[in-house]
Image 1 (cartoon, rainbow over the protein chains, first blue to last red):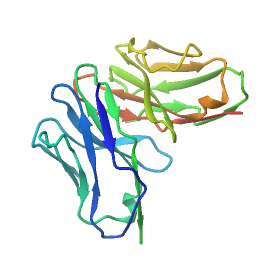
Image 2: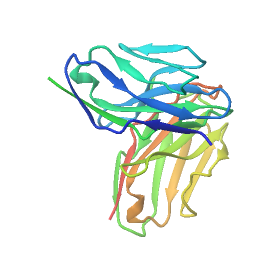
Image 3: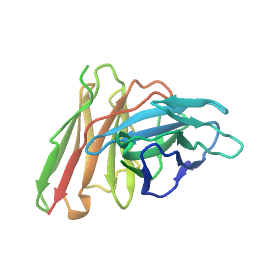
Image 4: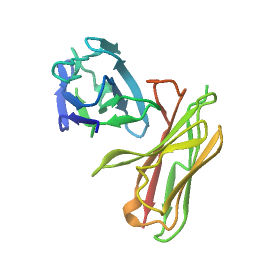
Length: 112
Length: 114
């Protein structure tokens, strides 16, 4: 079956530091890959996505590249802000009816 | 546009009581999902509907849990009887229903069973 593995958090960074959150996956076929973000007290919201190999998703300064050869979709940001403090979920979807498999989530804390 | 609406936002109940969680998806969305989030197990898909029909309920923990979608604008998740281990945040999400569309999550219902 499908699965997503994320690095365990929490990750604590100083403001303006470089961020990488690792994500690898196992799936049949050619899944689409997503990063969702959950701010405190809120539901998840889509951050970015990529639908085929070598695609790069980007939003709000975050980027992730779909690497089929390494089955990875690592999230990066060049300079984090305090407002980026949240939980980040890697996810994949393959097949019909959009059933999405989520990773465990990685908590990011950015300190001033 | 209003997003996904869930009610109540918080629910505290005693073991053995019936609990009903409610969800109003975004208008025009054809798919609806119920998730449960806990520290121990992360985010789990309980059930999802497409065009009001349950497609996959394999994530429903046991017979104490049931979900309905009587029309395109309303869904309920019921737990009867509730147990302390059901304490979690329950999210409803909806999407247009096309392949690979974004899921839009509601704010969640925090359930505490004493």
